[in-house]
View (spheres, helix red, strand yellow):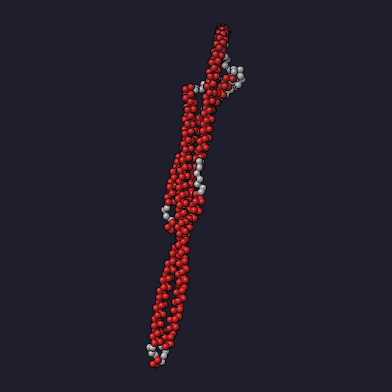
Length: 421
């Protein structure tokens, strides 16, 4: 082989050397025996398949007739059971609807009673409690000895205790009503869920009763024919009858709760009205007592003013008399002073001098007595003026207490009118 020659293979062609064309492989040839054998085999296969096809056609016709009878029989059986099932579902639907209607009426009645309890709670909080606390705050505005722990304060504290007790009862009743409404609505939810499922199931079965093989829309949608049922017929019946039984129990509980709430509201109204009346009576008695004391103080004040006026006139008279005596004393002293300037032997202690000395002593004694009486009258006047101020303060205190109890407290307490909520 020459050095410049090489071998190349291109897509089944064998190229050798340089300048030579491609050479293809020649396929092998069969003998006549092979040709006859092949024809006989093909004829035999064809005959076998024709006989097999005839047997299959005969067997298929028999199967068609048998399955047609079986299908008709099962369809009649299924439709019979389906009619029984729809009748049972309709009966349960009627019972569930009746239970639901009764539950809805009971739920509405419970809501009405719940609103009554809320109204009672609001009245106790916004009226009773607020007015009671307002009265106690107002009575803290009493002055002096009137700021005492009297029967009205004790009645207000008892009233506050009754209000809080009634509030506790109302709050507990409200919780019970809310819980009963929640339980009733839970059973109603189960009833609605059961009704919806049974409505859908009834619609499906009724639709299945109307279906026929000749309809065109058969088989459209997802194939769920092999889906296994998760619940047994016993579980289905047990769940439905349990829902009905639970709803009946809740209806009975709701009826008993409404009767209890009605009785409780009446009792609360009676207790609050009785306590309010007792407190109002204590207010009225206290107001009457303070008015009586105020009237007595006013009478004493009038007497005190009369004595004050008498003392003032007496002091004026004593001071006038004192002024006269002081002028007389000045006259006497002036005469003595003038006589003291007598000359020489004339400065003797004569009867005139003695008389002037005695007159001066008498005048000084009278002035002393008058000053003493003026001081006593002024002291008495000061005491009476102090008593007057004390009486006026007490009268103002009583007037303030009467205003607080009669005007402020009793006015706002007129809003405490209890009746059935």
